Image (cartoon, rainbow, N blue to C red):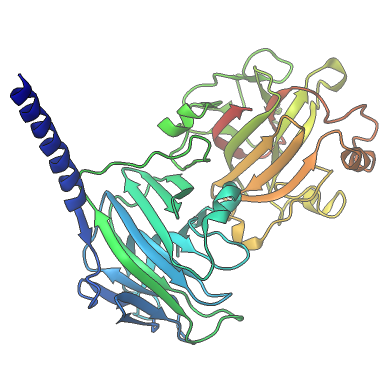
Length: 456
């Protein structure tokens, strides 16, 4: 019996060692430490060389973004590497499942696709996900402020990138940073970027890459923290991670479940459509067609994390209101705090109010959203919005992943702002403990989708 036990233990040990070896051997080196075999430079004139077992990219003035890309394309993979960047204003990134338009950039080509950011500036969005030459930022680190602390300036930082199925997840120095569920690019090349030199950049600054390895089989996803926010670009869906984290859809893309007409008790039979993947309000302004009216959630919410997408038509005006109280006094105009949804260029409301507090993503007639033009998407494109109402009454507005304003309901500053607004005669305006969520019919065609909420 003793001999059999020893044999059994030995057999189990061999099995464990074999499994460990197989996992280790499934890693492939993408860089041999001696040459750029398997890689090629495209799109720009920055230089790449091998020095001391590292790939070293060097900035060159007068050229666009330059990339060293793999000759091979990859689908599902886990990529790990170490990177260091020189300079206060330099920039770099790691392309994943990317492509090149060979005809663009006067025949030099233009790389496009998801990029994992390397950002040494005070903004510190290292590990965020940017869609190079296509959709701009997908996961700015405004969505995960804790991730900003992972990057070590002036040192080698370890990156782990998982591209499995439709998800891309990133870690910097073992800290989870970003999580995107996307609908584009099942495969593509991997690339190392040397960014073009901006106004404050310097020629000759370097980016260093080493220990570059990839795994394409026997993939074992790393567990990611439950609380990390997910940017899910699959319309009207919840990823398993979002479900585990307590999110629920307020609109499923097919039915009007969860919504009724404001002060009506049922969903409007005309004006609003809901069965083609978006909640859309019909345009009635300038016609004899009566408005369908606002729609509201049947459920009331207090503290929450709410995300939604919206699409404007030219000159359109709408909004999403929260902490809405329905009563007879305001039957035709339900009161609530409003995330403004507006075409700032063509709708006159943008120039009314005070200091732009009726513009897109603002707290309507109260606080102005501080937006940068580069984070705005054109009329007719889908925009991502997010509202977080914390249990302590702090509220944040986001537009396309970037925080544009914050305030505290019921604070002295908030009450002063209300006293200067059109709501000054409304007692305790915006201070309700709970309320419904409302989508506004302002007479213009506007679409909503991917409306999801997590109660806090």
